[in-house]
Image (cartoon, rainbow, N blue to C red; front, side, top):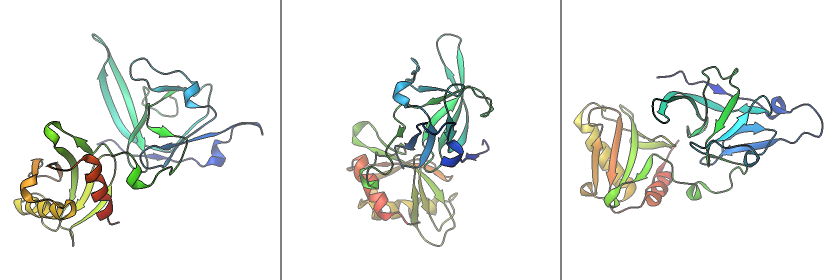
Length: 232
């Protein structure tokens, strides 16, 4: 697992030289956490042809980030070409928001901002109106898949967080045993208002990372029910 480091800068740190300089603050489109302060509008800078990411040139523009390191990813770009991406996620919900091609952030000349990941408006919607996070996805045949991360041996069954990557669920039983799966399904059935026959554990029978398939609900309905049940 890569080391996860948060790079946090205050707006005071981000002020460029000159009293008339304009600053643009960008927020995570999923959770509204502050992600980027820059001195240009993203829609005015070039975009990559490959993935439509905005190309923020740090030699020309200010780029102050509040992100977490998410490790290196290798992507095939045409025949015999491999692109290295050092990805960065939102510090609030861990949504993939930008990347660079150099390992060292300080020496990286360009920051590539994922198209559609950021917004200039913070908290423009209520959580119920926010986009459904990637951890809740639509499958073929009308099924909805939920990525779940179980925290076992807890005092109570509860949903503690819904973020971009997974739904965090605490369970009293050990995750490596079958009773944890039974407890998880019974608890999720109560939260979602479903019978056991409407849910299938697709992956993760013997570990903490699980995939749950759900019938008869939309991704939006699943998301809203999970938010309603979530406890800090």
